[in-house]
Length: 278
Image 1 (cartoon, rainbow, N blue to C red):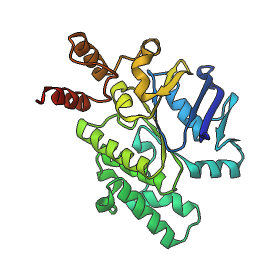
Image 2 (image 1 turned 90 degrees about the horizontal axis):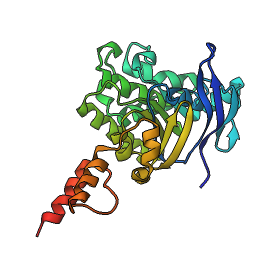
Image 3 (image 1 turned 180 degrees about the horizontal axis):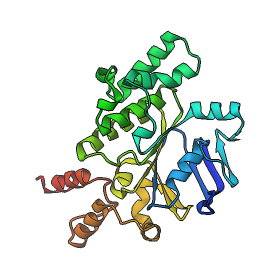
């Protein structure tokens, strides 16, 4: 399969001399769900900003659809139509008075006609479950609703790739479940998703591919289902095993589990229940 987005030996040195990325290499498959997993300072946000060309590498190369990113104005505009970024703090991204105005901003800047803009905005709001709040003032929205509007604003540009920086941060458990449903719906539409997270349980449950970042470098990339085989890499990255993997191993020690661990606690409970059913 061809690769959609690639970081090729990226190095980024900030103006103060600190290193954001250090020989970072990883690849994103079209249509896949990707979790960048790592501790604070590991380079997750810096990498996402390189994928969207908000930052330019000191060394190395970013490639989109097999071609090096063109950092001229035309090239940047073309890339950002295809690769959209949602910041961790939605207040950094929202600046219009109402939801519909904010989501309309990108398509209007593309010079699209009014009917096309209206259609795109309607589709984007529907995708994130915000249709009924289209006319609501942005400053009256909850934190979770603001995150949805930010996602809708990017979706209205009809990107191939959606980048999200810590999308679950600041959300309660119910809102996290709702946002995961939104992300799953976008994946079903063929949108490639790359998000950063500290949550190994979420990464294991949701992602197709996991990329472990340590000190600005991608230590390992692997299919999420193979995570239990990467205990040493996780430990090196300062990440615990997912709770379901720990529990599965404990149960196996008592003869109650075998094979590869399920990807979620719900799946493990269903497996155990089926074993108990006569």
